[in-house]
Length: 423
Image (tube, rainbow, N blue to C red; front, side, top):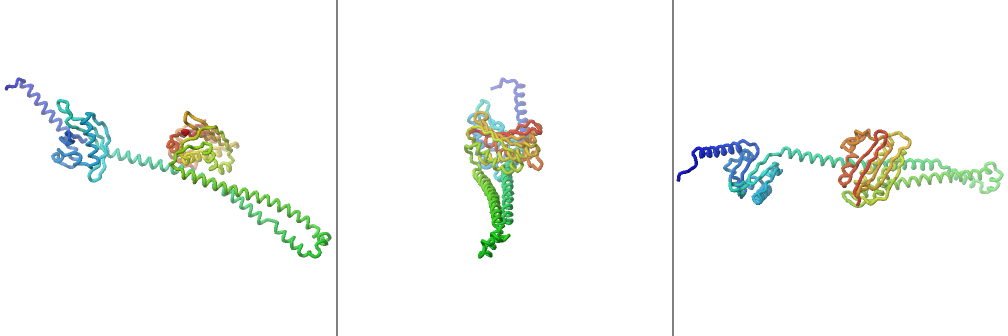
């Protein structure tokens, strides 16, 4: 049967087919990314030269094979499942980051796009895809994530160290007071006049036979009652003074025990989220700083409104509040003003939130530093390390809370607000 198609049209069609073939070959031979075509069983039916180089195999060794022949079973199984889903639904997978595990244990990463392969009638007869190696950028990303986690851990550790430093600082202040009390007691005992009682007793023993005449006629004897009265008054005053010092010493010992017990109690609650009393949290953190506040003559004002319990971790809230009160004490003390003051407030915030506020009338914060105050390593205090506020902000976020600051500028004080969800 003779074809009715014009010769020129037939030749043009053959030329186009030849050109399409040449273009496809050139494309597969030269593209640096991996290109592959697969049948309905996920067997390779065409691959790019880059894929041959990547697997160090000739094309004939790859065609007819599957990912199970080239990769680990886990990766091959996941890829096979994706391709079968494409064949079943006709829906492509665009820009998926895949982790490739090779038989020798190597790990690589690719950005892959897979699409349905259709015949002239529109039937899905397989899949085809393109994969771009992104191993270097992915490894960089993973390294950055790991570094960030390490920085967060280091900041959290530094923040807890700040709490421990505050505890030790306050214990040290109390120990100084203990030492003063112990010195006063020791000095009082060394200089006590009670040893004069021995001399009085010796005089009584000597004049036992004529004690009446000695006390009434002898000039020295007549002064004995007056001396005994003076000795009694001195002993009573000394007793009162020493008892006062002993009471102070006892209170300081109890204070140290309280601080240590409180720190131990909080340490055992790490990671436990529970309803917490804001006033109790504020008072506990205040006791941690009590010695330093007293030593620097910083007055504390409490403005506690009735609020519901907050939901958080005791150890983390303590970490934040101890840091804030300690910083407020420094800010107030460094201002040099006579009315150094730290104000602690508890009030309701937006719906379902409670605000724990630490304000001071100290040195204040410059406007350009308000946005940097919580950055890792940033500090405005000489000798500061910039970990405390950074780790506190992280701890607040971990409890679904926020930590913010306001200040009208240098010399105008600062207000830090910890906002936590109510229980």
